[in-house]
Each structure stands twice: as C-alpha cells, then as structure tokens.
Length: 147
Ligand code: AMP
Image (cartoon, rainbow, N blue to C red; front, side):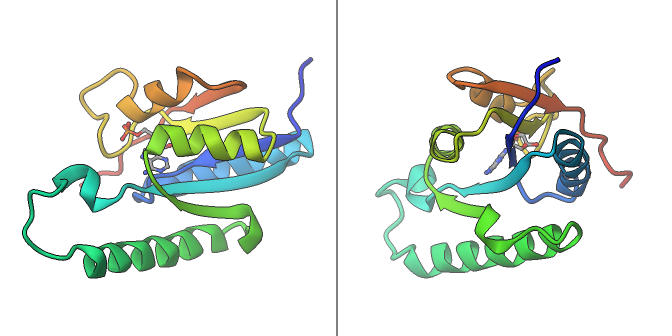
C-alpha cells in the first residue's frame, strides 16, 4: 500500500474548510504524515488590473489580515503549528503547486467544491490543482452547509 509522508491541504477559508481540516488531520494521523495547510490570497490587481482609479493596497492589507485571522481560527481546532500554515499571495493553482514542491508534498488535498465550483462536477480550482500537480491529489467531497 502506498503511504504519504507530507500532506498539503488547500483551503479557501469558507465554512466548509473545517470539514477538509478534519479529514486531512485524520489522514495525516493515519499515515504518520506531516500536515501543511495553505490558503492563497489572490491580489486585487488580478481582478481589477489598472482599471480602478484608486490605491488598492489598504484593502489588500485588510484582506490579508482577515485571511490570517480566519486561518488561525480554523487551524486552532487541530492545534496546527503556525509554521505549518501558509498564507501566500498569487495565482491560486500555481502557488499551491509551488508550496507543494517546496515542502516535498506527496499528497495535495483539495475540496471538491468551494467558492467557485458549485455548478461544476469538480470545482475549477480543484481541477486546476489536479492538472500540473507532481504528486497525488485527493478531492474530498464537500457537503454544503444548510442555509
Ligand atoms: P473551487 O474551485 O472554488 O470550487 O474550490 C475547490 C477547492 O479548491 C476548495 O475546496 C479548496 O480546497 C481549494 N481552493 C479554492 N480556492 C482556494 C484558495 N484561494 N486557496 C487555497 N485553496 C483554495
């Protein structure tokens, strides 16, 4: 049976992320693997480019702070060490691949769906991570919370 020694969990910080954290934590214990958790903040300039006639840096800082706080809260549930939490800025799929390579990850875990994927069989980010990954990728089915 193949085994994993370094797992990278990618979360979008939505409420469903706690399901992924529990599952990744269980798998990490099962395999005796190190667990790293990543969230990627996409720069506002990716969405708006130079089209907005204002300085976006303050809003970007607020988004980064919010992401850090949310990551802390979610990771507290499994006492995830801070040095195994990654909040990085850039293109989501590329950053997940970059950190996976840097941490010598042998299993990336993503949710089947997140913010962008409700209408799709597999969310667009999950699909993007699968393509181009240099290790196994596990898509964990995410149950949407009742409204
Ligand atoms: P989506 O493509 O939005 O349906 O998201 C599917 C899955 O991709 C999520 O459940 C997360 O595992 C991962 N994901 C989406 N956005 C991000 C992000 N900004 N940072 C890290 N992982 C993400």
